[in-house]
Image 1: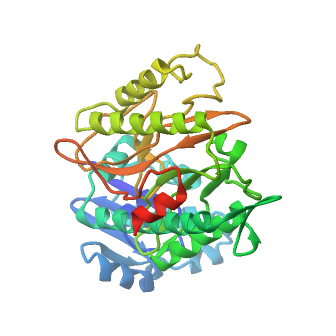
Image 2: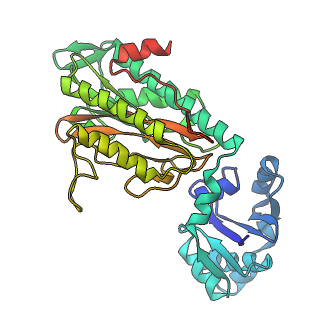
Image 3: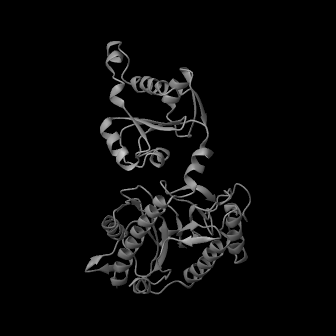
Length: 386
């Protein structure tokens, strides 16, 4: 097994958070070599690590004092790199694999000191794909938060009423911002965080990443994409549902029915050994047969903004978008992968629909983790949750 070297904090480095399952905001060094798992970290953080994972050997960072560097006048911006070299050499580390996100300054200093570093993102991705029981429980907890947030949204939608200038709820204008706030508040009740969610209305729903804003109109269509992060473990779940208000547009209803069929097609195809790109192409073919443009039917290099213009899905864990990919370029699925499937149809300037579930790849298929009705009508969706 190659040596492993990671430098960073567990808030921003998902490779580090996977190796050291504790929230640590200051940079530290973690290595795997000669059968050891070692973290060189401030002792107070070391106590927290040991409480969660006693298999990690703790070397207090205080044993690498800065006094001589201060006396020698080393620039404050160079000190972290000097310290990284000292720590790596103290472990006897002469070569290691690192992820592509490894800090450039540390890499330059370590290589100058004779430590051979090889970027091997594939190895770090493979370490994280097959989920442990702990990881699956964390993702399930995040999924419960996503479902609770969606309930908060449909509660408001179901109670809303038409007015001369748009929808109102409890005597106040119903806005995307109000729905987003309701979902965020509900996330917190389930130990989750997630203020980067999507509740997009009307033409905004045609843009896959428009967060949504403004007052809902009486006959709007909404795309609600919720991807909360479990606060204690930092694992994500991801779920999207679409809703209509008032009298739904027949075209939107047809899109939604076809998208649910596309989701079921993808769900049936996903299993270990299947390439995610092949599943994406099957869904593209399904949509194309029904007259919709897709990534696979337009000329190469075409900017596609209508139809099914994005990938089918992705892995989800400590990042909301991780391998395996289910798009034009796909990974072969393995048992233990947690993925999303999110087919959708859109027309720029008009609107769109999307549905998305989080799923576990099992030995012979998939298990759907998210649990929420697919109804376009928010009142029916709410009733089905009760």
